[in-house]
Length: 302
Image 1: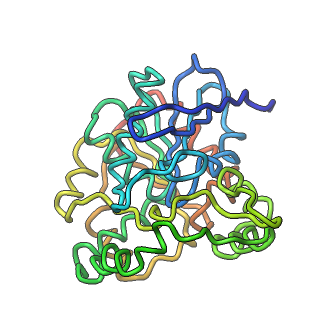
Image 2: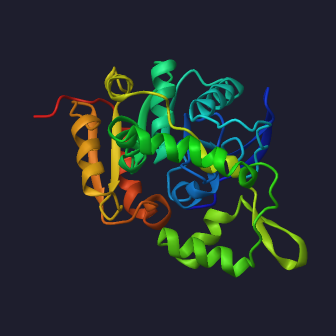
């Protein structure tokens, strides 16, 4: 397959510039790709390179991530802020509706967007969505721990997130650390870091990600509210799970009990891979994604 035409640009918003990248013909049906925690649009490059040319793929770097501007705030930022960024991008692209591919935390953000702006997302592919949902185990069942992790730690270490000199690494150090923590090959780690690794002094490098984004707050919804957001008229959904993703037993059981539901238009696929399976195993995801996106109708399961 020939390489897709790639375009990059910045969209000016009320808070700053958002970095956008697209692949393919802009006159074809749109697919928005929403990355996960502390990542960038680069994580979708292996997957998009294998997807068919029948769609226009668009991704972006979250505020304070990748090539997007940092947010001028010392207050913790909520995931809901990214929902408004998606709204700005969709308006900019003049999409009446679109399909969505999201990874991890991006799955939650896409679900909230659908809840607030129903009818825009026609179909959604969620890549390994369960890990991000474990935050709600702590919010609901271990609230003191959740508050300490989200708020107390941040204000006790305020200087580390606001104005402290950035951590510097050798290029090899940063790549090898990413390989180790995310079970990636060197080439995969270089791809993941390609939009966020920037040169610093003395031949060292740093990441462009805004430090405060390490403490990005999850959607402020308790269990029943989140259940409603996830289950109220969801679009046709394909969940692609990595079977090697490490989730503690108690948290996994809580998420599966409360937030995983059956529906005639919700489908599940399991891949023998870790959390970043769209980076490590894109070829195994593609047939499932293409079949789901191209399907004409959805019928009730027997």
